[in-house]
Image (cartoon, rainbow, N blue to C red; front, side, top):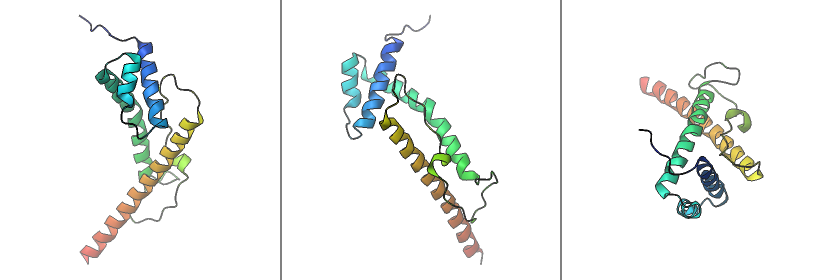
Length: 143
């Protein structure tokens, strides 16, 4: 017997979009999920589950591409430990994340996407630097 859905797809999409929108506008507000759940008359745990599912569906692609960017140079060749790398432009080093359902083309989401790309590029650079330091320590310990 299939599970009966308690909430419509429209309610799920709108409440999820509202939470994501409010998280962007009010990053320090910890009551967003509770308030949104009350607004849409949905359970808090249901809303949290929808948020987790959305994040899971949109985050893996970003992390896989960021790891690949950290492992390859701009020309596509593998990065050698200790090799000097130039900083890659933030826009090319990281992917754009998926948009939440029902979200518009607001400049806030553009700014967030750019900031995410910038931070992912920084993480990739730090990983390369860490590998270079590991290689240097290995050389020093071997001597």
